[in-house]
Length: 62
Image 1 (cartoon, helix red, strand yellow):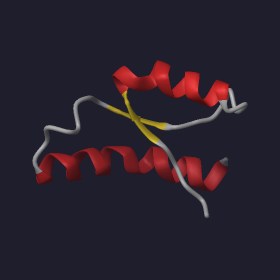
Image 2: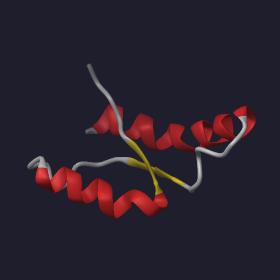
Image 3: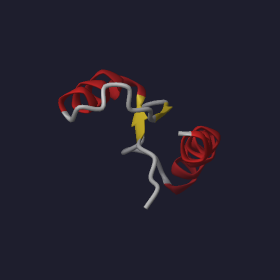
Image 4: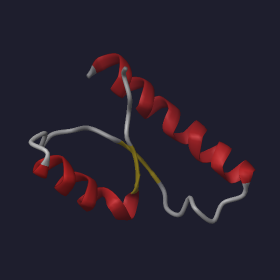
């Protein structure tokens, strides 16, 4: 099943490290601004719309 990982900016280094450990050093993921956990529903929706173009690119071209 196709999937795309989404990462907030402060966790880019962690995402890259995990990908490297898993043997997929160049694993692409969408990046959105931090934070997400403290957002209300409308804020989460805005972040989802912000991530959508990146997610589509990952799913359709990678």
